[in-house]
Length: 319
Length: 319
Image (cartoon, rainbow over all chains, first blue to last red; front, side):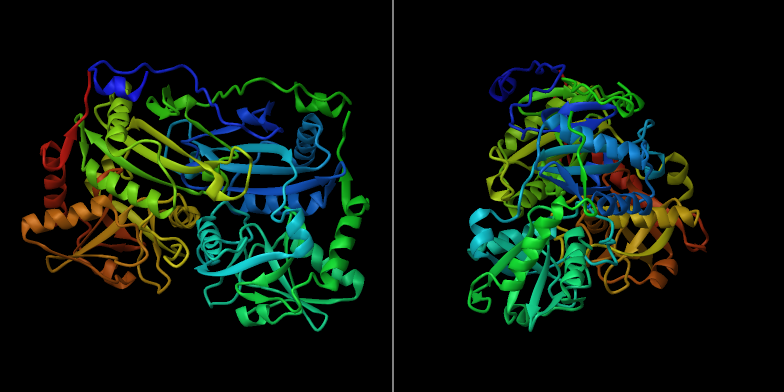
């Protein structure tokens, strides 16, 4: 049936039995309700509060060369978030580890982006009371993705600072990893409007907060600094602190002003989607000589080296 | 396959072709991708940015006694939100009106809760750039629901004030109706913990903002007042202003303190999900004599009367 047809007829259109989705989805495997499924089947009801109220928490871990990187830290954060939102998971930690490994192994990907999700779900009696909801667990593995592409990783990203304010901790606890991103999306459009490739947005005091899916670091006189307030405590951010310990570099979390960032010797961003990624331009300012800095390179090298280290990574059980 | 089975075997579980969802969904009809579908089929991909980034806007209108109430105002707001998020709809306004009428008529409901949604969607090339996404339009009609049940409408709701701060306008523009609700959900859990039935949360200055899905009004010395800052400009809130005009009552939007609200002669909340609903207790304070006030009753009566008025309502085209 077409819309024109319904307009010219008093008869109602037919209700189809099932949805025919012609969109393309990346190759990958999802887990829902005890089933492993292709990504095209991994869907949530529009009535799930995880969609209607963004009432959900999640985490993403990546697989590199067939090994999960710092899976424990990601699962720690996920379980904390689920508890703080007063949700319940139908699986324990070791079951979830098996599910994640299965999703990756079934996908065949050696480099994967792996997500675990818990949504508020829906109530069997259609109650609006979130305490009566049956929470929903979902996991999936898709190909590894990065905030920065290959060219950007080599020459450094160009970032614009948007005056959009990151949702403050008094509204949403940033330690609960969440999908409340409209502020970050607004920042991204602001950045595109200025010809930049991605964005940083501010905290309520006008200091630098974070960007869409990443934390930011500056290096000044060989000392590293990253915003402390109104940011997700990223696992890659934590990893930078750990790598600095190993390298004997000083790293602190504290307020970072826009001027401080632009006047830094080096700037980089951190995300599970791409790791440590250099930034060489902020608004119209080149960072130092506009080249990727030596401490950034040193950290990037060590970061990727750690992916083979059994203390930092866990093998996927491929068949 | 069971999880136990996978744990004890080195063989991988099977990937099923389709998801078997055993959850119950309310009776209703949805529209997606040119198809009318039962609610159990109305699902979005977990990769849709509308889910992953809550990058979506929506509106809800209700149908009462077979007539949409103030459909124009809801669609005006929806189209404004879509434009502000820089999304594009595949249908024009009259096509969307037809789709909504069809969803309701096909559902058979004479009293319905009708939602239109536009999500960022996904990119055919799996790009993270929101400009490259194909936006997704969804509509559905389910049975009418109310924030307050019958008993609560008669005796008045018991509300608790949570110190959670509503996401401020500098982060998310509240005039774009959005799914960023974790602050409201937190407020709701705080309220339940105090034995209340629903919640109000604060603005960044510590004044009253709004509750989960509703605005709030107070009446003092026959004058009405509702928070002006950090709130969704609700259609039912607008309707109260319009009804006050007709009744010769004064209504203003301005800062409302917690003490002012508790010291009011009458308090009520407004939502498409229930209309005008009385509040007779806030935290441990009874509002005035603890009975539903006369101006609240007068407004409730006129509100429901307007549902049959062709100037305020539009008939659904049932077959």
